[in-house]
Image (cartoon, rainbow, N blue to C red):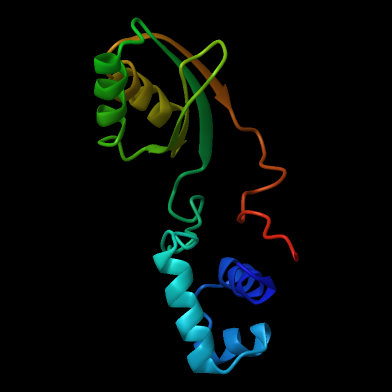
Length: 153
């Protein structure tokens, strides 16, 4: 990956809906060369996909929680069962296997505290092998994730 590829990645991460002509201008390439490079970046796995960044609050998700989950077993079967079940819970925005005191940290979106109570009782507590749940309410997001740093190099 060279400096031109990095410029393309930064531009796509900022706005993946911009035209190839605009991307090419930013990268200092012709549109066809830019399109070819984007295809190569996709093939090489640098670009995993394209998504819309939705506004959760506008969709009615006014609160978020980070939830630490500890399992009653750490066998491969227990981890696989938990991870498979997590994929079926739409309110779980993210799930991370952790090193440390808890086994997983998950991020939950809810409309209000009553909705979170329902999610906690009906979804999280019923996931396979859950032994302990520790929830933390997000009061305010100070810095929102907008992408990976792509060095100028």
